[in-house]
Image (cartoon, rainbow, N blue to C red; front, top):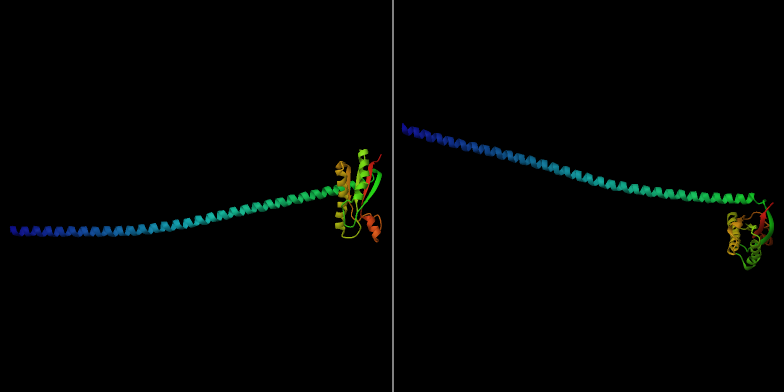
Length: 230
């Protein structure tokens, strides 16, 4: 009887020991499976995070590039605006200069009868020339002497051409002729404000342009010493 009890106890212990071992193995397997699953899930989440970070970096890069292009476009627009403003300024200056010239010509024309002519001299020029020769400079010395002796005198210069060439070219040529006379007088010490000069081109010919002699007479500057009329 005692022997049976011992055997039974040993058998029970053996069963108990085998059951514990199986339980531990089961728990271990479940823990390993859980850890494996958790590791896989963690790896998946980390992959998603990395992918999301890559997309964000790419978007940031594109945003930076777009910002740079926008800044370049803003600078280009600023430069274009500056050029446009400069163009407007130049146009305004040109218009102002044209207005001044028109006003001056109008004043000269309106005042043409408000002076008494004291003396008149005609300076002749060669074809298509506007520089003074020695004979012209010698003739102008008497004009300068009169201006020095009479502070109340002023001088009006009217430049002319023949009808050879275009009207625009002749107008500019007549202006150059009048300016060459004015420059010579100023260089001799006469104040600039005492001299009025204008180019009238082919207008008011002194002789017919149908002959060489007539054209020679029309290439001239009329120098008039004037004083205010009473």
